[in-house]
Amino acid sequence: MTLTQPSSNAVLRRTLLYGTILAAAVAVGGVIIGVLVSGSRGAIGAVIGAAMAFVFLGITAASILFANRFAKSDFAVPAFFGVVLGGWLLKFVAFLILAVLLRDQPWLDPIVLFVTLVVAVIGSLAVDVIVVARTRMPVVSDLAPSRRID
Picture 1 (cartoon, rainbow, N blue to C red):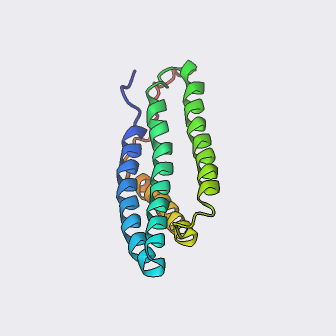
Picture 2 (picture 1 turned 90 degrees about the horizontal axis):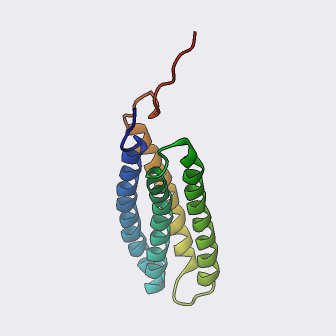
Picture 3 (picture 1 turned 180 degrees about the vertical axis):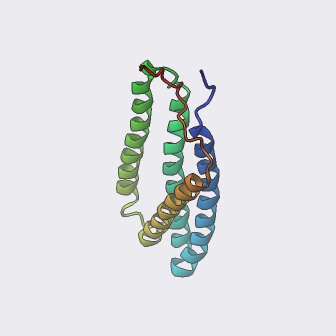
């Protein structure tokens, strides 16, 4: 039995869609609050925070979707985990670089950036929970059933 796509692909695509909607909503709300709190510096911080959260959410889902294309055999499973781990390492390094580069910039409000990023991350966790809770996945695995030996 061979499958063309793992059943997790639909879940990941839905996560990307809802994550995009969430990031847009957080960006709009963050810009409004950021402008009220500290003017254009707050708006810039809110947009950057929402964009960072969207990119980091997208890297995880996209790396798993990409890796699923190659995980068709037992020999490709290490490549699958290598791609996913590489995505996580990419996110970690990108976050550290952005944190250092944006730390003392006079053109953005770091508090608005931080709060927007935290709200977006908590929202993306909620999106993950909602998508998985509403997904109807088969109880059986995508793998072919093994033979029973009596």
